[in-house]
Each structure stands twice: as C-alpha cells, then as structure tokens.
Length: 452
Image 1 (spheres, helix red, strand yellow):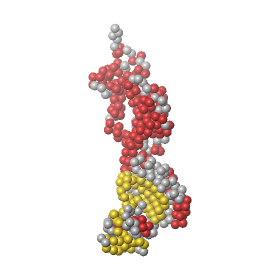
Image 2 (tube, helix red, strand yellow):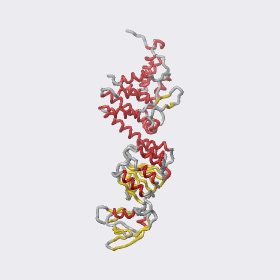
Image 3 (cartoon, helix red, strand yellow):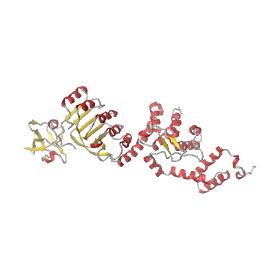
Image 4 (cartoon, helix red, strand yellow):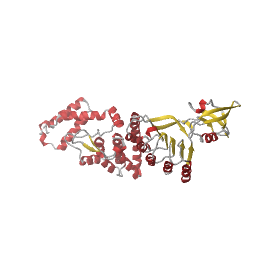
C-alpha cells in the first residue's frame, strides 16, 4: 500500500490546472461544516496554496450568495460589479468554451459549477451562450437561456448603455466588454422554434425585474406612475398612467427607463416637460396606447418625436397652441383611432384638411371650454351622474340627477348634444343652462374653465 501523504509532495510538481481545481474545492468547502473546512485548508496548505487565497474566495462567495445583496443588485445595479476573476488569472475564451461544454455534462456537480462560472462572468459569456442556444438539445438550450436571463437581470437597465458599452470594474486590468444578454434573448425569440418559447418566458421575467427597478428610479426623479384622475373625451375618469410634469427633476436620459414599464398604456406630459428629449423616451414605452400633451408649448421637433411610437391609438393636445404647420405635421403621425385637439387655437381650415387626409381617424376639435359634468348616455335625456369638483358646473349649482335641457339657444336631449355645445366655447365664456330638478324647470349661468 502506498502510504505517501500529500504533504510529502512538492508543490512545484503540480500543474496550474491542478492548483485551480484545488482552489475551486476550497471555495466549495466554505459552505460546509467546520471540520470539512479545516480538512480542506490542510489539504490546500499541503498543495502549496496560500490559505489567504481561500479566505478571499470565501469572502467573494459570501457576497454573491447573500440573498438580500443579490436582490438589491438586481434592482439597482447600473455598473458591472459582478465580474469575478480567479487570482492572477483572467477569464479566457478557452475557459468560457470549457464551461459551455460542461453544461451538457452527465455530472450534476460539473454542470452546476459551469453554470455558476458563466453567471459570475456576466457579459463575457453572452456570445457563447447565444451560440449554445442554437443547439437542438433541449436541456442545453434551457440552461443557456436560464443563465442569459440571470445575466440580463443584473445588467444595467438604461437602454442606451446596453449596446456593448465598456465599463471599468475598479481595477486597471479588469475591463469587461458588457455584451447585452437582453438583446441575446430577443435574438433567440426571433429565431422561432422551441428555443423561442424558452426565450419568451425569460424575457417576461426580465421585463418584470427591470420594470420594478425602473419604477423605483423614475419615482426618485419625480415621475408619477399609478392611478389618478384624468379627463378622457370630456369626462373625468380614474386612470392608470405615467405622468411627467413639473415634478420631473432628472435629465431627460433618465426617462429611457420607461422602456421597461410594460404595464402602463397611458402617458401624460405637461408644462415645461413637453420637449423633444422627453417625448422620445415616453413613446418608447412598449405598450403605449394613449398619449396626452397638456398645458404647455410644442415645436415641430417635439411633434416629430412622436413618430417613434409603435402602437399609439389615441393622441390628445390639450391647451397646447398648434399652428397650421404643426397641424399638418400631426397629420403624418402614427395614430390608430383618435386625435383630440382641445383648446389648441388651431386654424379650422387646417383641421379640415387633416380630416380629409386621414378619413379613418376620428378627429375631435374643441375650443377648450370645460363645464365639468358627466351624464348617463344610455338615456334619452342628459341626466347628470357626476359633478367634477371643483368645476364650472359645481360653481353654477348643478347637482347629480339634474337633467340639462338646453345651453343658450340650443336644445339638449343627450349628453352628446351638451358636449357639442360646450365644445364651441373657449375657457372664460359665460353660458346659460336650462335644467330640470325634481320636475321643476330652472336656469343657471356658468363660466367655463379648463379641463384638469
């Protein structure tokens, strides 16, 4: 029997690969019992490796495996902090290729170690994982896509910084070219087949993670995302939306985070925030259907920025002055269903020309006066269901269940008749209203305001 102990062997006789395998063994032992850890340390001393290296490896794994830290990193990581390097050794293409091959290994522990290594090097593994995803082997594709999903969850969520940007990790010799795992997942989905189905699930997960992080960072710079009251087609309704207004205090580039807000389909931009840089980011919202620009000024460049919208159905300009040239520019925007021009002082002839150019587009042209009532449209009477507070209607004394029968010299039989009459007036106009309350005919005067 050979009784020679490991400590009788000379460290110089070991290959560098054997030393690295011993280093990995010590990394794993950090999570074992104290006795096993001690045994591993003795073994590594026998092999001629420094115990301090093992301690460093344990420290690295403790940082990476702490669940709270990992969760925070996924939400807030805007720099490449996840690059892991072996002592005095950078990750080579050969290392990456070996780990990719190990994803198909029959050894569970070897597969898991390869997955951990590929996750740890982040963007450096993206190209190889994208190639592996083209395999016809279901399990290999599943593992490659899963790793890409985790890398994408950690990478920066500012879209313009995801195009192969070079970032310094804090060491002069540690520069990682961060290839975009998100774009890799999109490429896999676009190829079709069972790989596309795997990628689609990963994309949904990454969108949720990035969406949560984006919401938090947008709130920090004054962007509102949630439910609020909003006027939709002359009526006040509670609406989920993104709102960028005078509270916005960040650089316009911050709004690129809206590209990850997939659960909102309505956006409102108002005041000084109505500008080209803001609009370019707002229309990048993946599911934007309704956009409202209110109480501000626009120029042609700002209007042209809306061309970037992919599935816009409703566009509204409210109390935003539009020249004839601007109306002509709006005629070429990608709007699917309706355009509302409310209080824009637009030339009527240009609006009529727009209607001729876009016959399938519903164009509502209003002078901007706002009364502030909601009527039940299912009756053959303009029965007030709700009165906005504050509003011209409230100040005029109108109440729910009142029935409006006329405005000035125009009869009102339905809510649409009332809307048409109000739309002919600008804010500040005084109108006379006839109505019935409990069978009694009454009159009042209202000074129209602006819709909120």
